[in-house]
Amino acid sequence: TTDLKAALAAKIPGEQERLKKLRKEHGSKALGACTVEQAIGGMRGVPAMLWETSLLDPEEGIRFRGYSIPELQDKLPKAKEGGEPIPEGLLWLLMTGEVPTSEQAQAVTEMLRDRSKLPDHVLKMLSCQHPDTHPMTQLATAVLALQVDSKFAAGYRSGIHKTKYWEPVFEDSIDLIAKLPTIAAAIYRRAVHAGLALIEADPKLDWGANLAYMMGYTDEGCLEMMRLYQTIHTDHEGGNVSAHATHLASAGRRSLLPGRTDASSPALSDPYLSFAAGMTGLAGPLHGLANQEVLRWLTDVRQQVGDNVTKEQLSEFVWSTLKSGKVVPGFGHAVLRKTDPRYTCQAGFAQKHMPEYPLFKLTALLYQVVPDILKQTGKVKNPYPNVDAHSGVLLQYYGITEENFYTVLFGVSRALGVLSQGVWSRALGLPIERPKSLTMAAMEERALQL
Ligand code: NMX
Ligand code: MLT
Image (cartoon, rainbow, N blue to C red; front, side, top):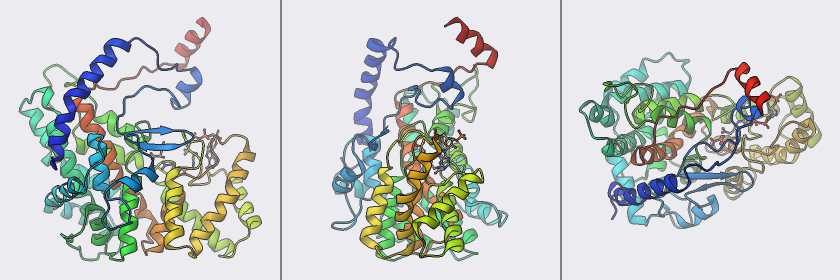
């Protein structure tokens, strides 16, 4: 079939059985412990969440449904021979677990295109925003404004059976994914780029390329870059802030309070509400906003040291950043312990399309300088670059110079991962998330008993 919903529906009963069996046969086994250090230290490494769409290995990096990024670049359908994968193919893979054919990916492109138009009230709302409102705030606000059309919220109100939850969640997720490029382009054209007129989508283009096109970019290299960008930022297992926040808000088998039928209660929130929660998390400087911070930091380097910077000058700059109590943006990771394969993939794209670009050369030089310095601090667990260290270079090269918009592009892509998982969470009937918290006194007491 080329119908994504039908392909998904065919997979669900088998996966429900698998989860039932896992629970029945292994439900009482411990996956790991949680030490006092982990409870205080942001639950690092505590295996306490089910997430099907991707898995992160500290050394090897991300695998989407078992496939590494180079494997996806090889296997997923492309818009042009030898080009980059189209994100619609990855969406099929994330939802169904199967690599799609070109026809299946094409059917996703068409389904998204059909649903891409934004209601007028959302555009009006965006045009009323204070000119200094950060693009990420605008993104979250626009997503919330779309919630009035939530099919899940309406279904819940009308008393839909819980075994059917996944269906309106799927519909909402596809509607939202379809509209996100239009929202992002509207934010870019209206606010970031000083009130430029909006551009209608090109019906001949795929979802990722249309995002660049509606922003005002038509260069073939830029379209390819956007396809790749939108593919690699989709998912990074479930514990990162944007995924976890989306999951936390959406989780729930049933209403929290007896008799309560309001789907916007703190759990079982529909895809619009829960994705907005994810986006407000992505907007933080240690998470997705790091791509903006990297560009600002690189601009500072160039202003203070110039383009022909030496390794010694760079070292000095990095040390002064650290000594002033700031992080070096784009380096480090809570899980990864090697260079992020998303960084490597973007460096490969730059090597192919912009080998002489000064900002690319500066970024490559930083790769030689920063890890050694971060190692010398003795505390940074991963001194290597992450995804955000390289994305701004590619955007700048194609003329997308407004760094405060970069995290919006990350957010559009992240929808594909977190909303695909959201559909599965409802299909599998995962309950609300409610971990146990402890006071210091309670931790002290428990620790003394061990
Ligand atoms: N520059 C300076 N110090 C750092 C860095 C860095 N790039 N990375 C970690 N540290 C510090 C960290 O602040 C902490 O210091 P302290 O004990 O004084 O609080 C210490 O090293 C240990 O932290 P880690 O356990 O290595 O890292 P953690 O898991 O807490 O945090 C990040 C992970 C990603 C938040 C952290 O590495 C960071 O702040 N990096 C820079 C910001 C960034 O690039 N974020 C983007 C992450 C990817 N994404 O898109 O979300
Ligand atoms: C992400 O893509 O979400 C980031 O790399 C952060 C993370 O995985 O913790």
